[in-house]
Image (cartoon, rainbow, N blue to C red; front, side, top):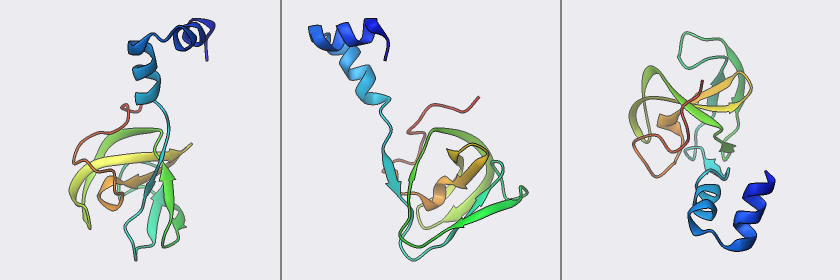
Length: 106
């Protein structure tokens, strides 16, 4: 955190505190009962790099459009970046939203 941000937090600058809170990372649950393919890019045409086990939780660093997928949480073209070079379809992640919940990748 930059010195300016530390000072803003210490001084109680509410807008800066709200910005920091909005960008804070959190984990999201993967749909119960599903083992989800993690792909090397934002689409079903990318290679599978691993498979998430049932009951997994993921940290979403950024989101990007890609192949449209239907899953337990609807149909979406949003893909969640969960690690360097690792993406899963947002249709399998319970984010509480049909739209973007993190910044766009890029």
